[in-house]
Length: 303
Length: 303
Image 1 (tube, each protein chain N blue to C red):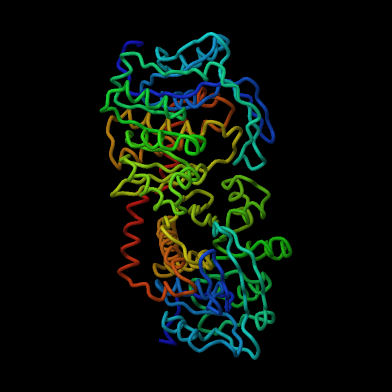
Image 2 (image 1 turned 90 degrees about the vertical axis):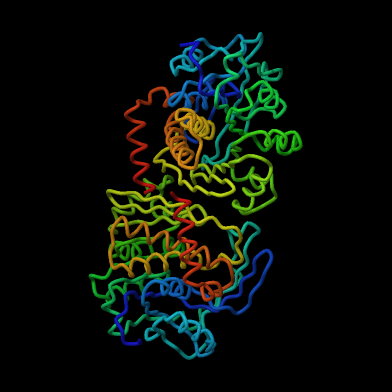
């Protein structure tokens, strides 16, 4: 199993989170973009994780990764504490405040891809410093299909470097405000056109509960989100969406308008499960039958 | 023409508006929910308008209605001034402040449906006082299919009467915040279930640029909005959406999941044109070829 060829590599953060919502609170739970993305992607395709944890990282969290079938050869364990994040959600759960961030071993993270990771046909560069994203791209087989995520911090502080990374990827994923921030454009089709001109063949604009839009130079694909009847913890929803999407793409190995649309649907449904509990709990308990049933419901809803 | 049977009746407000956006301003333009809804609906089906204007109502505005082919037998002309509204949009165009409202002849509006209107198979009760909506329902053939719109003011001040109206209609249209306000529920599928329990067979939740959702007890239909590359004036977009939707339904005469979905698409596309200019200007210049082309584009985008 550990030596079978991997379809997808995910590089991102691994954290121990403390999350408060208006009605719940969970302490020291497994989080980080790589955790959510790998948990989602591994439902669809064999996935290798690249990230770093400290020597305090609980063994049950590593077992959780293993139960998902995530390949951990790329997981570095360093002396010191694991990255920690704590946040509190506002009443509407749309916004949150960060209470504390301790980078710990993540401060010196330098992603190194094991040799067998470098030939994987799909790569998800989850949100980390663009300099680290460059480092990963330099190690990866240039024919891999690359999905890139980022955040407002790098748009503000590392714009030229980020533009370089964007020019080297196939699919750029941003949320609505990042799309506007990167381009200065208010209207998303106009912003997307400008982002496409930076190099990627596809631009995905994530609108959370309002769905997502995928743009290429000759096609636009609009997808409403799977409608939620409850949210326990929205943390990681965007990473689960992106992970489910690239995992679904990696499973087919095909990238075209039809497979991208199916992949966006898979991402939306997996993300809808992820928010039903804290951490990776709901993705852990999720059965194939539940997943298939909701994808079927969703397909009927979007006609 | 004036005596051919009408497919749809629209009852609502007719106003003379002054609208300011961050980059533009237009004074004394034709507005009101009935104006936008009839202009949109008349693209699809023969539509009769019920409303009131003062003796100051410019004849060119009446000619504008006639050019759309709107039947005006139900349009009352009373001594006095026409209803006037003035508003200013915020930078994001999502929100607006009302600067002034002069009800004028609209204060004593009592809708009276000409005999030939009462047998029309479709009725759109646009946003007016629920007591006036009751008055219209009492005059209308009870087998007509009724779409109801309302606003936060009536939810706050006339809840019991509004609930009575809601119980008598087939399709209730509300926006996201009205759905939450009416039910106290944060999650739209839960809110929709509660609204369906109030009587209507269908509940439409309008989310503006984020699309719309239609609920019945056994089906949910999700539709993203046609993505806008520019907005000159968002006034009347919701009325144009609803008007286009009910007009499209009235054109087929069929109400089922498939025709409702097509009708929502028609509404979204007509609304996307309506916001490209002030007042009814863009709906006036809109050709059938332009409408068909955009519906085709939209269909490809939503897969």
